[in-house]
Length: 360
Image (tube, rainbow, N blue to C red; front, side, top):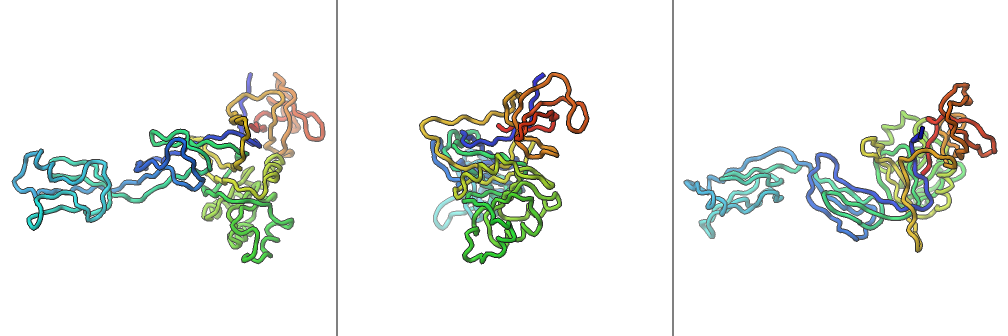
């Protein structure tokens, strides 16, 4: 029976498409992107608003004894769906010295114009949705913008909800301790995303903030640092997750091959309902041939590259050499549905299917 494992994309060159939408409860105000437009990571492609309380404005004061709908409509200076500002004229009767007006008491949107009443809904706040990656707009319709680009793609385990597009480099050999000894005014790490091969500590995050780095990427950190990371203004991305996890060699080798380049660090909070997850995109030219798009939601096959997600080989990337139809005895002594994999040492062993993650 086919087994469909969790999949993380780790590709040196891929065709990447990302859809941008307004969050639930946000009403579209303006599409700021058009097909074939080139966009930058921090360029707004959608603008929306969170609407609040309703206000009814009665224009009867300037339309005394007028009941004819057509005549009332002629006084109106706004239409449904229009945005208005405090003090803007909503209705007007007459001109010159005899002119009488009704103005808006709030910033808001006209939701209804009927008879002598204008219903306004206040704007609590504006929301902008950024492209997140540099690329080209393929579609811009139905409140959705689809952006396409090419580059190296690394999907990760957790992020703190921030976005960055900066150059990146690995920490000094002595890690955050070495970073803390550098004069921030001349530091080559200032406004740069730093890559740590070691799990983060509370002190590490404090040093990163003090040294004004543009972001932090690490394999893991203790779960009790989650709230602290969420309060930081720069992206924090964990490639493996919470706890004391070691890095995946394939990910750090890919990062190491592109040190000094700019990359999009989308530290999105994982969302199982939308499928959104944190990721690192390093824009790269595709050459004459378009690279393949990542493949997800496929069955495990012999020859696949998979990552082991449990000790004692947590983070190790291995090759599937056999998919036995019957449960196998694993290192723990349990008999479980398993794949036989080849370790870097050349040894063949059985690993429970639930402990494998496909690297797309």
